[in-house]
Image (tube, rainbow, N blue to C red; front, side):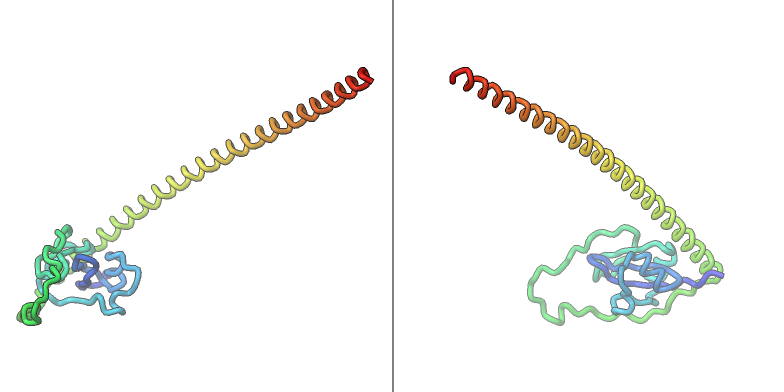
Length: 192
């Protein structure tokens, strides 16, 4: 039986991210995190009803919103508008009022099973996409290796031809030098 989905949230770069996943490991994998953000305190499970509802509507899909905002999570989000203009603000202006504590929405067993099935479907789709990308990269790598091997063979052939030509030229030069010496010796004998 598939495990129940939980909603996890973190902030990476310009975005707050949320995902519905069965475990912290699955959430980290969906985010593409190279380290354990939960252990480092940068990610956590959330009970915020709005976040839970958004994540459960698209299980396994990473949802974004501008960092620090209280907007809605979506698959594609705009960049944050106000990143702080560097003006000195008083602490009172930067404090946000704490929202009233809301209870998590009740999710029926049927909805939970449906969300879990959608998560598995999305997970399989990502795996297929990853395998396609790996196959394309392997094909490209093989093509490059073949091109490099062909170029190396052509270089080796050219170098061997160059060495043979150089040897032939050196042999001809040596023969010409010997002939010139013989002719000079014959010329000296005729003069003497």
